Image 1 (cartoon, rainbow, N blue to C red):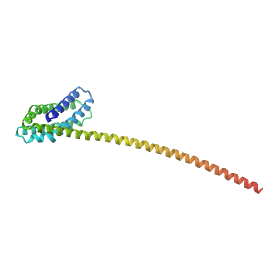
Image 2: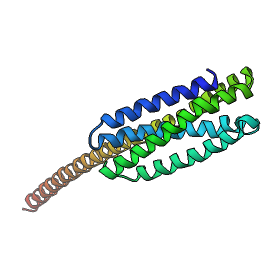
Image 3: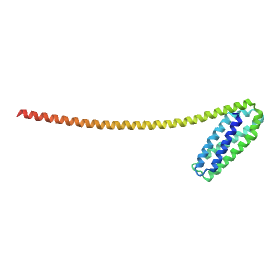
Image 4: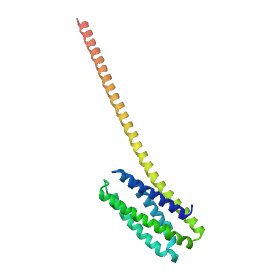
Length: 207
């Protein structure tokens, strides 16, 4: 996939998420926002790491690229502020709308101006190469997150298993201890009876 197609696909995905955010009610909005935040953080990461550096040198894309960096900074600050919320208040919803408007402006400027100028400044090979690199970086970042989630689940499962094993061992130890006590009591009782029997026999012999 070439660079422009990949980034446009990201744009459409975020647009759909903003529509879902508007339709959501109550704290369901916060869950949709988390998805938006994840997508935007990944999108800005691959643009700033791979796409924008390739557009800083060509004169026709230089100024627009610097402007895009600034727009990203605004979006990142809004994401940080919105992330602090625990409930979706009216103030939070208003700020989320500001985020949406900033993202929509950024997307419009990228697709209608920056991409067109980048298409003229870069070769087809460059555009394809940037797309492949961004796709690989996305996969790497997403894989790392998935791996962290999997490790957390495995750790939790391991702790549960260890806890069950400990409980079973403790139960066996308790049962073993009780059985040992019973055996000890029986042994003591037998010893007592034998001792009493010997004493009785000794007395009879003396008579």
